[in-house]
Length: 291
Image (cartoon, rainbow, N blue to C red):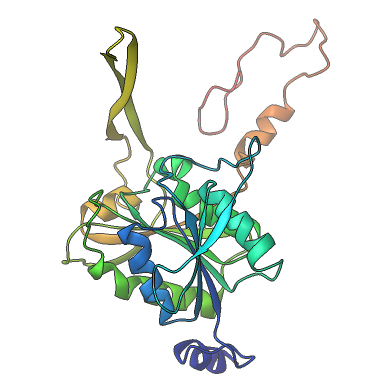
């Protein structure tokens, strides 16, 4: 059985005798270089349907459109590929694809990217690229987000392609654990050392707002900042990327802090002023103050 599945994937066929259907999305927009490169890799694996924003949507996170109409139109940017541009967010693109283009029949794989810029560590929360992949996973579609450490519009993605192909083949063969997707990041440059399966680093942006003045003498602000890594572990995505490895982080959309449940259950939610725990501070198992 396992050998049969492998043969099917590597010949581009499913067990039913048809090629797998692959949804390709992104947040940089339908004309971005990254999505073109991702689409080209996917064409070697199955039947490709592209649904992408009609303009850049970086940093949109898991935003959806609820206050105005969403429009999508078929376009012919590349020969032999079914493509649609969407007026909504990256997550809207996945929702539209599942509900209106696939009409409820799920694709075999959802891939997002290749993003111009990393989505490692805390960036996963802000990323439109990763949020599109998360939405795919919510729909129970095996999903992967791909990102490259290069913000240039003409970034060179050629060194990522063999890794992307291999990772997608592995997911098509093996599937993914329930509620899980993959966050894959690539360093810039050709001399990659290999792949590391990692955890998300404890890092964040130390943000500043550069205050400026418009022609009408009114202040406005431009978000800037420096990415600071607090995590010295050698098993993180930040470490892997800094040392020339492709990082793969398994991500889940269940945000429950399971380690905090026991602590919260020790609190008094009755409102009694005589509670022994009223006014005290309780710490989680890791020492974090929860009170």
